[in-house]
Length: 358
Image (cartoon, rainbow, N blue to C red):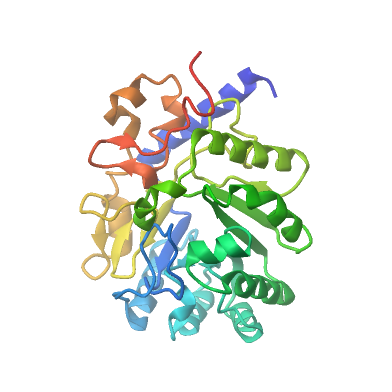
């Protein structure tokens, strides 16, 4: 593909995003069942773990699912179940059994440690289609990052139990930090012999609990190594992707994932938090201006249709540096989950790391 062709495609994505600001389309609805977790990850964007957690009662979850079914009957969004560790909810299978009976296609993000053979079979019966299991490096780094002795082995066992049952898509997600960056080759050798469908690699982000560990953040050289690694594995034909984390510049866009960068927060994606608050991506800092409403007071569809104006705008216009960047139309201020809402600036910007204007 020529650079002119790629620029034309990025222009189409830009126009599409601006159209979706005016006419959003709910495709992914995240349901955060709990903030409790049996791990206490150093990088957790929501600071989950052994923490108090408001949790919507089972009947409230059922009501919300019925309302979403009624209000989005022409095309139901995919239901994305997350936490904390969602399997800690004792009524997990009651809630997701209802979702399945209502016709929702659903998937889950999990640390995998609670997925026994019986749990895997129950997940299949409840209609789960896709699952992403966290595996953050080789055993020493994975267990240290998640503060869970034996966590790597438990996650690998969970992956094996899922594969034995059979799902539409089993993914491994790896969060890379400075100390685990060079685990990738050895981890690849493990995963290539496991019948997973994709490997999603992302960098540790300066959000949530990770802010307490700046020494683990990637340097510019680390980012270049990470991006080069993903690009090379994709060129070799492996199902490895960078995920949705950040805009990587015109030259690299299209080489690291099967789509061009688009932060879908508030235009394709919404979330219902454990306490009933409604927002966009669950990794976005939770503060008054990022919470659009609460399902205890307002029907979800009303919030989605009328309350997401905050997200449906060009964040790049808020920051002079972004506004002057020639690639602002393709980046639009980068991902909302790494936007500094006090300074109106991106916390992560790949410009001058992966590309320059000259």
